[in-house]
Length: 472
Image (cartoon, rainbow, N blue to C red; front, side, top):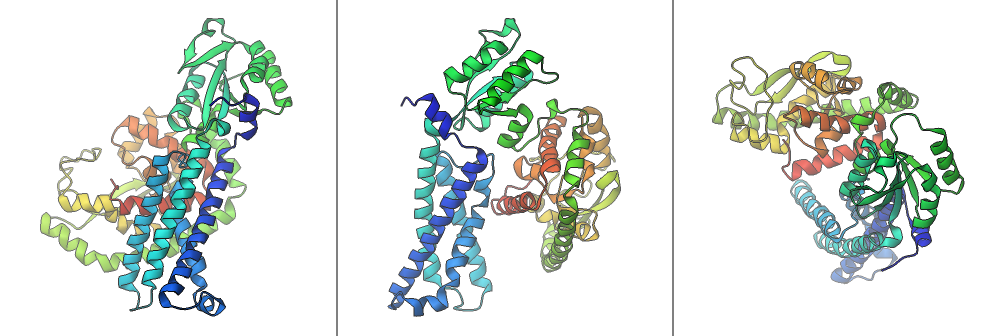
């Protein structure tokens, strides 16, 4: 289908706008499913679907949609909006499976006959049908050329090649790179991932007008020459959006491009965040204390069973103590359930752990997959040495080496380490320097964008990791 360039540019939407539309559609579908479930409930009970029936059941109109939207929270992650049919099926059916699992837990814990069984069944079926219909419609609409952003990249060097590759990897259906601009005459006519280098700054405005460009990505690392700067101003004066490569990379990947950070990036990011951090820090600490206390109560209930399983398989202590670095580089003692054989580091030399590490016991593997091995860390959270959410606490032996190998690695110590974190839910366990460098990109993103919303998203995705046994 051929779509006029001007029409494409007019209808291109940002990620925030697409996410907002997705949430609104999900909310409408969830409410409609709740209304249908209540109507079927009344029909089954042979009662009129009228005011008298709704007076005692109306809270379910709120509870059903609220729980369903919460279970779909992972689909609202900026880097993975469900804009393909496969994504729609995956996310909707995953939410239904989580809802069914949650119902089974509540069914065994709640008093007898306190839950409306048929109504919940009706709601789950209706929510899947309405939700899937909306998600498939959403995917079909936003995968069409009408809503595709046409991007022109200024700079065909390393930064330009990196953002073109990132757009193809993360956002192939939302962005189309129509070309690149670079003043180096040797690059003219070359291609970067199928996108042509169209010429120098003089070609910028004509290319914007001829190719229906809706956004310009500035991928120049360093000083921008006067003629190029003026060409960018001319485009901005015509209403075009201009975004830096680093900002767009963060938006589409949830990571910070480590190679493109200026030396003062950490200071600037931390100072900008500190202007609005007091209330956030107070709420975060209050949540940590409450969650730490609740986690310790849960630990007390599960400790005998977990301890027995650990001791039956292998001799040695139940709890494992290890020195880790906290906020500001202060060492503290971290507690975990032992998941390896007792003499895993008998020679005293620190080693990376891997997914198929032979030192991990069978009970330990299960504890790691469910993340139950980290439950004793609620004590560290309660004491204030850790937070619920933050970068993974690292061992001093590894930190010293990684700081020499990876720029900005010590920036992780600006905030408290976390029981879970943005890097943990996106990547998993690091057992090489390259893995640590990649995870640092997510940690720096969290450092820059940390908020109550991001913390809540991380906690919710952690629950999904635990339920799917994807812990490491």
